[in-house]
Length: 345
Image (cartoon, rainbow, N blue to C red):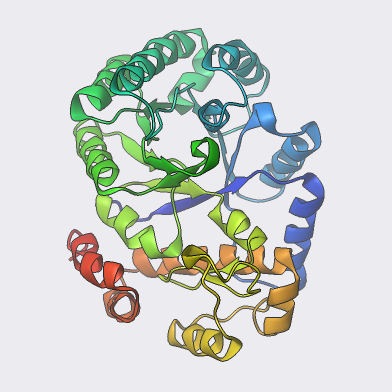
């Protein structure tokens, strides 16, 4: 069991908003540091954003992961073949990050079985070639991404990476929903595959990162799986839809702009205050609920803090608190939390 689960804040916003978030955290003297681990996709980030992240790393302890851009292949912004050489060139020119993700070809839930197989084989083949072309000093920082919808498929990737001696493994084949398959979801099948990858990685003394999945309600599952880390941009995307987080809880719409959709169910202010007290959350950005309703960045920073609070609770193995919140939650979480927490006990 991993002792400390880490959350990588996925940064996909402009440098102006990053600076605003930094200023909000500093001005309100927030004790947790939600920017201690950052994931950024260099081929799709502006030069100013990359420089800002590099400056942040030089100023304070910050772990930076370069993502390959597989998400943008997944959503059709770029082809897998177009990813290879620009990414390799960028890695060769920038040695300041801590983790370098190899190029992966993400299957979606809508792909036919033969296409999934093709994407898995391409991921293993080109990740191997890419790794061999990386500068030697970066190879210990390489992360190979496992893709696949079956044990046989994920083993194609795992065997390739273990033969190369890679000790950082990512899992990226969670279920996909939405337009262009842009949203990852933790289906039961994908979670079981992810746990298999973690078990195989432990045998090789390798660690596993979960790509693109993570909201407070799922963090006990992620911890219980044995993953070392995960990343998510849900803190920002949810804020843009008017949604807010609380520790170990589902998201709620605080602005009521999308109250008709089940997943964007609104919450009354008095109910939010009760739930905030129940989950023992407190931060400067939700003290005034009207500010939370009106300002996207307030919601975003509040969500970041709730993510970090949730991770701190699970790392501290505060089981009584975690159980209290899950029992109070939705029927799904009441049914699932004991299974998620069983590896912790």
